[in-house]
Image 1 (tube, rainbow, N blue to C red):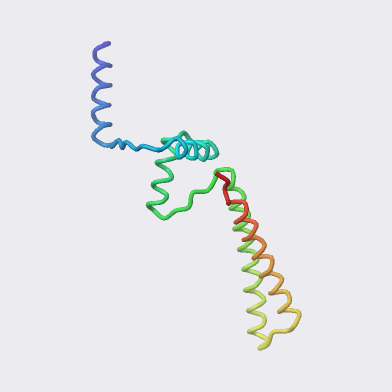
Image 2 (image 1 turned 180 degrees about the horizontal axis):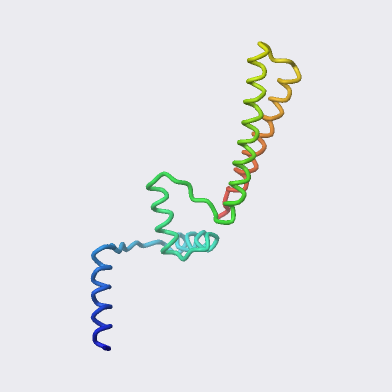
Length: 129
């Protein structure tokens, strides 16, 4: 029975090696410290972070800190709401055939709010390494 579990482990490991590739990479101490710090912020170990960051870059995806996910979702909802409001005003103006001063001021306020939301989001994502 003991030898049987040993054989299963060998078979599993052999299958694992066939379906996975190991890559060796070298970093300077300062580079490794940076990677370690970011990985810790992400809640990942260094190897998992490097895998995640590499695949994100290869797929042209953004790598955001995990604690920012809720902030991103909230900001996207706010931006969509602002966009919907602007579209409703544009529709009204098109139906009426003109844009009143009040409606234009509202549109500019929404655009200003949208710009503030984007700037705030950008500032939150600037990571200090």
